Image (cartoon, rainbow, N blue to C red; front, side, top):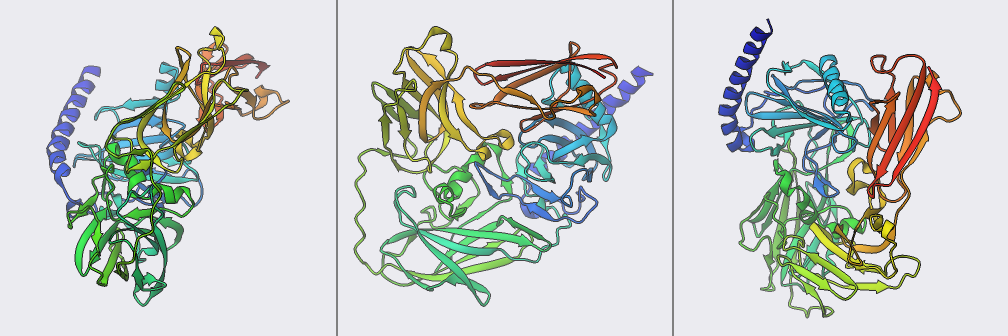
Length: 580
């Protein structure tokens, strides 16, 4: 009987690979207008309302899916969008949280993120795998014959796991062959949207580096069917200009701000530049920091999306027709008509119009930069006490680099200010700081760079105040990805481990719950055992929860041991004895 089942599974696998492989080639070459419409169904049984959409600007990434509202609650039933098989399961406290992937025979894969439990057979398989690996965070690749699904089949319950900030379902459609994420709103899902994008403001830049100038911001007002600046005729002393736009999209029934699908820039009725968000390559996702003006965002001005390309931006969603990457030539002193079309994925369109003139007035003199770091070139700072180096992909645009070192007797190094924290880096830089105090041998593995890291830049949205550093010949080194303030100190204290409920008999509780966190870096590893056997604690942020499982722990005396390590391998351990 087992041999017969295996034979059938082999046939299923072969047929699926044959079909998905042959169709996947055509899927790889399809354009948005050729995406199959009405092939995929709504993965929920409630009308689609969006809390977020494809291509929205997010910290350090474009949003890669549709965030479907779940009536403000968890555990809405989630259904397979089309026939296929469960090809992957990922469990994590960060990112997509509990995520399920379904490969379909037409060359696409759908992804369902921030889930709670999966359907019963799959949920039990996942739990068995976690116990077998003694690891809660797992990533499993499955075969076509293991968990086939039909369109409309119940597959999971929605949740709020991973990096989610509220209950919803994150839904994606990917090209199976390339792993590119495609705009699911272009596949004919029943999204009712008749609301056009709303532009808020424009930013006018000169030809210099976007980080070495302050763009002129012009709020917009609606006049008839168009939006325009408060003063429609604009003048500038810049003979060459570039444009950025702050805008939001909306849909009926949802108060959430959404992203715009496409913008097109015209001057004197000639198309100059455009971009559209229909395909995202994960390897290019961080270029959102150059597609939108990161500096303005950090200053609290919002996401101004650029209709020009800076030298170090390799995102591939732009189209430039003026051969100057979106730079507009208005040097002739004439008035030039500018209009910008904004379109959402449903085809709703709005527009901005104004005129631009450079009358030939003298430009304001800019300060002299004594240390220019150019985009596209590797850069290095090396002194007797400080080393900082970036590769040729790190900078999006030229910067005027500066640094300071301030003595700090209470720490193990000077306090170093590197550049401007409002300027982003694409790749990691190498930072080395010389120690100013003798470091005992036993502390060489305990060095940290004190440096505040924002929650949105980290897995699970947990902020931290430091990162681990390595000791090398009297220096501390680490890979860093932000400019800003750094100094060296040590961390010898492991994470704190505290019961969520204190002074109670743990054996009488329906579940065990602990808060485990580190005061400087992060919790790198967690392990718990019940009577010597690994216990499946589920992590959500800094909270770890265990639900009693009669198959793995019997009634009677219980010894619970919890261990947690931080980035410097500082270990904390606590033991709890009780009966149930």
